[in-house]
Image 1 (cartoon, rainbow, N blue to C red):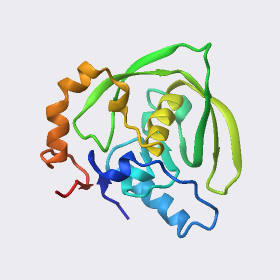
Image 2 (cartoon, rainbow, N blue to C red; image 1 turned 90 degrees about the vertical axis):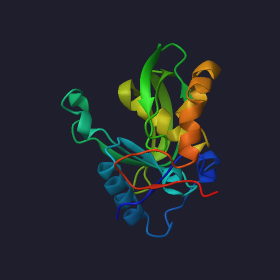
Image 3 (cartoon, rainbow, N blue to C red; image 1 turned 180 degrees about the vertical axis):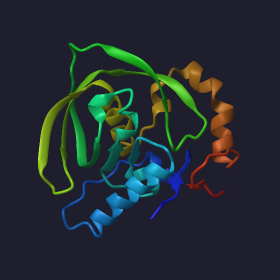
Image 4 (tube, rainbow, N blue to C red; image 1 turned 135 degrees about the horizontal axis):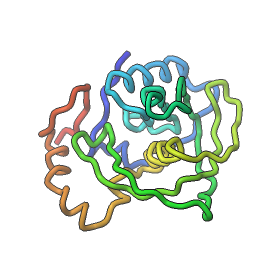
Length: 187
């Protein structure tokens, strides 16, 4: 089932998400729905708060990038209760343009570390503790930020944020177009 994506202004996008347990109701179905929603919206990552749930769950599908980044061929993964344990202080930082399904039409340059240490559980609740680098590290940081109530616009300069203020206001008012179902803040 394709779910509506919550856009900027929805309170759930600013909440700290909670860990879930293996008995979370219909978890496999929820993950499948998140993948379907992600595919339908042409995204590469989706966090549960973006579909209105304040739980620590993220799906990432990088297979769509495999023509340019062959290392991500067939990469489609769910991350349950993920946390970034540390950032590699010795790795460089990289600035790239980011967008977000919850911020349709807004793209800004964001600087992030290129290597991170993460802990998470897979769909079978097997625990993983690993270092991740490259583009996946960036996507994980972007999606895991959602679980802490942050969005990529929180990582841009105050001046850049001021420059997009009008676009953010239009999002709040529901004045935007995108090709996927959304749920805007009701006044």
